[in-house]
Amino acid sequence: MKNHIYKLLIVTAVSVCLISCADERIEPETFTAPGGGTLTSYKAYALDSVPGFGNIYGRAVFYPTTTGYTLLQVSLYNVMEGSSHPAVMIAGTDVTELYTIENTGEGYSFGEFSTAKYFVINTPSFYAGLDTYDASIEISLSTADATVVTSGGIGLNADPVESN
Image (cartoon, rainbow, N blue to C red; front, side, top):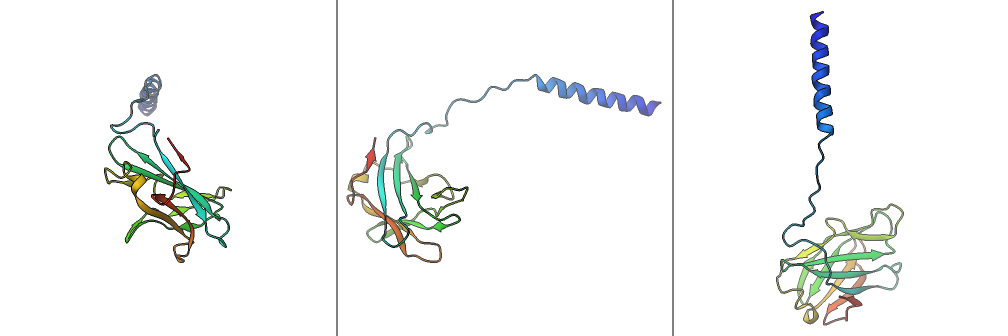
């Protein structure tokens, strides 16, 4: 009999705890982190396909942040499902390895950076000097084959296809 009373007390205590927690409403946090918010300014450059590689083309978009960094987003189109394409930014003899661009499948033929949506350029004056930057972005066929399949000039080498 004592056993049944203890079990009944435990069930009652657990029920009271569960019911009391269900009524608590938690309001969402609607403010942004310092330096965060909506990206409204940008410069977009075309990445053109190299003949003979399946018409892979794309866009490189640069966004300034309020903290002085520049975010780079690269998107490719007509890439095969499951493919990985290393990306680099070349300025003279300086080569900056960007994130690898992958097509994760899901029935789409586009690819984006695999590590994060944006590659962060932490040079404070990069975006302000982008128009005078003498560089290009090159995308390779795969991690095993460095043949360039898509490329595009940025800064001095090309006019933005879109900007705000």
